[in-house]
Image (tube, rainbow, N blue to C red; front, top):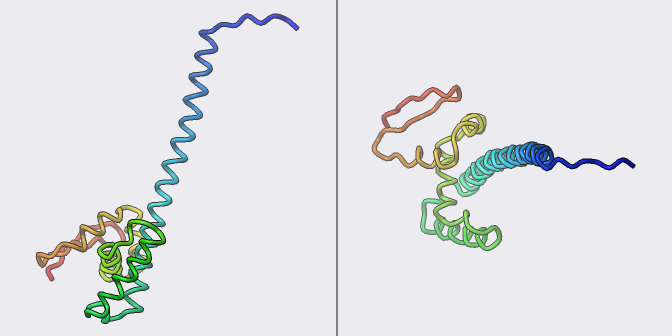
Length: 142
């Protein structure tokens, strides 16, 4: 076997190039995972809100309904951790009530984050900002 002359500068350049390529793959995959998880988390929150709204109907507005929601949120938090507090669950319900059409919500959630939806549904000055499925913004007086 012939002796190879090791050029440390060439090894360093190849190593740097290889490192950059591998880290780009990892970083891109991680970003895709974040986008995937966020998208599905938003839909999960919407489905939870819709399910509770449909199951509880107007009971959710009574003292009895509030106690049921408090118990539910405590049990969900115990099982799944933070993110299912009473206020988080009621926000899921509010978003599902405000964006009642699943297809519209799914389309908008490709552009908006859950935080955006929470901001939009909490506007209480009589003006609601509505984004249509094609992304156009309209303001409604309530």
